Structure formats: C-alpha cells, structure tokens
Length: 129
Image (cartoon, rainbow, N blue to C red; front, top):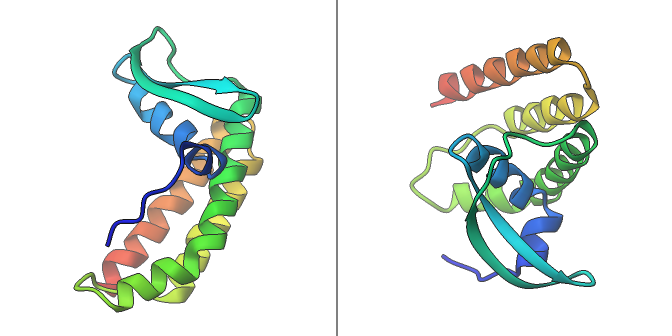
C-alpha cells in the first residue's frame, strides 16, 4: 500500500534530515524552498556539505525518534499483515530506546557507543528471523 504524504510531514518526521545525511556522502542533498513553514518546492542539488552541525544532528535525532515512537504500532500491524517477518515488539522498543540515547550524545565517542547499541539491536532482529 502507498499513501501519499506531504513534504512538511516528511521534514517534521526527521526524514529529510536523515536522507540528506546519507546523500551528503555523495555530494548531494534534497533542497526545499519554504514560504514560512510551507514547502513550496523540493529538488535534488549538488552540495559541498558533508554532515550537519551538532544542533541539527540533535534535533534530527529527536524528531526521527519521536516519529518512530509514534509510528511503531502502525509499522507493527503492517508487518503482521504482510510477508515481512514480524519483529518482536520488545525489539522495536529497544530500537526506539537506542535512538533516544543516540539523540542525547554530543561527542563522537558517545556516538560510537550508541552505534554499538544499534548493532546489538540489529543482531537481535536477525535472531528473530
């Protein structure tokens, strides 16, 4: 099933930030033009950026974590009604916990510790399969 969403929803969920983090590796980004808080246009651009400032990273992690926490029930029910192997609720809850912890870190060492937690959760997901 596909459900069309708005760019504002995508941005508010932290997904525009997340996608741009990945695209920055390749010298790309999705650029949005705003009229107040309304996105009037979105398009790909070449950029020299390679990451975001600490405040943007923190806000991005918080927005994405909140989005995942809000959507966890829907995602779980979609998985239960599909051919995708469902992941135990406690594993999803652990993913949310890890992301919440990651959103609090400011230093690279703390980020690495958070990534270790993410790797552990991914290992748990593999065990469920």
